[in-house]
Amino acid sequence: MKIGELARRSGLSQSRIRFYESIGLLNTVERRPNGYRTYPPEAALVLDLIATAQKAGFSLDEIRALLPPDLERWEHGALIEALRRKVADIEALEARLAHSKRQLVALVAEIEARPDDIDCAANARRVLSRVLGDGVESPALATGDVRLLGKTGRRRAVRAG
Image (tube, rainbow, N blue to C red):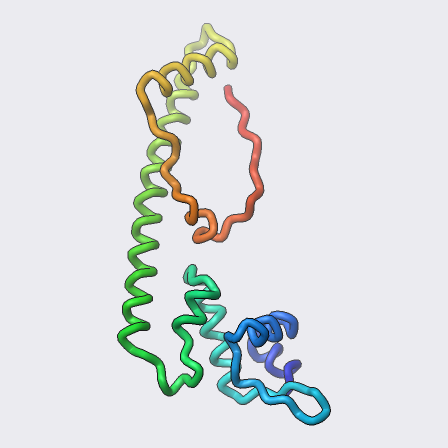
């Protein structure tokens, strides 16, 4: 099948398919004398596997290490071990997120407990002095967590009050 048909079947753009080919994730490509790429039916399966693995948090390098050149020669043990490692990574991330959530919920409660007789700036100083005085840790996300969560680098402003 030609790349346009593969793009329709997989739901991926032609440029994405060419990208996967260029980095070695899609090796089942044949070139015709006229320069057109042709793909076997299993190329759609490989693209589905790549997309599913990315949604599960696998990097392209991890996917490359797991995908065999021929789907008939998949190393069962290596696949199971990689999946178990990813589950462990997700569990560790969940624990860090739960810890961060508890800290943030406590901070919100502290901010909302503002006495009626003080303004927002004084409340911010009160909360900061309590937080810093209690030695409360900052949220416990690790460096790779943002990538694993699929977040972008956008930041939002937070107003104290």
